[in-house]
Image: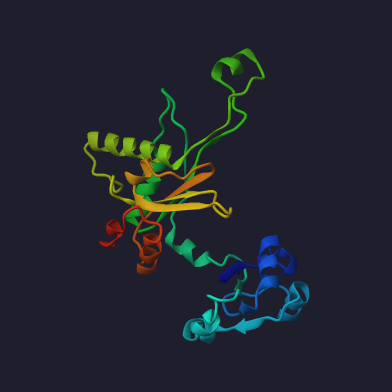
Amino acid sequence: MLYLIGLGLGDAKDITVKGLEVIKQCSRVYLEAYTSILTVGKEALEDFYGKELILADRDIVEQDADSILKDAHQTDVAFLVVGDPFGGELYNFGETVSIVFWTDTWKPESFFDKIIKNRKNGMHTLCLLDIKVKEQSVENLMRGKKIFEPPRYMSVNQAAEQLLAVVQNRRLQGQKPEVTESTVCVGLARVGALDQKIVSGTLQDMTTVALGDPLHSMIITGILHPLEVDMLKLFAVDKSILEQH
């Protein structure tokens, strides 16, 4: 298994506990050494991790990646990156939005305009889904009663249904929304947990995918890189929807 591990930006102790455990079990540990640096050197990291580190400069990473991947299907290999190992993906994301639970009298759509702006710029949108914990009803709030509603966590299904309702509203207003039923999206649940779930499909698909327990989030894609397409196919409801990208 190949592990990509972020080290944080400060010193050796910024690594997560799980990251440190993985390093200790790996047979080879590479330290990416050309996009950033920590405030401590390689020797300090080796002392803290109890492992010898192999420096991976630009030539190794870009021209000799096979040497890093060698035998990774049989043994554990770690690739350490200062900061966020997936920081490069941030360049492909626009402004993050929050999707809140609608009520009978309150159905905000302002988040949709930000999604449209991101789409027009070819950017993906991370949608953070609403959480209602220790909320009071209007009646109990007005009466001063400390009675709280059961916790609610928005699912990808609910978020997709609200998005589709906005799409229909915009069409009724004579608009042609950048987001439609066939827009490619990604549903995510419990990311980082052992039972995490990732599903890619159309926005319409997102209304029915089974992602299980909270917490959920969703990505609405912009322009997809070929490598992103290949990855999304691994989690696709229907791979054919990605063939046109």
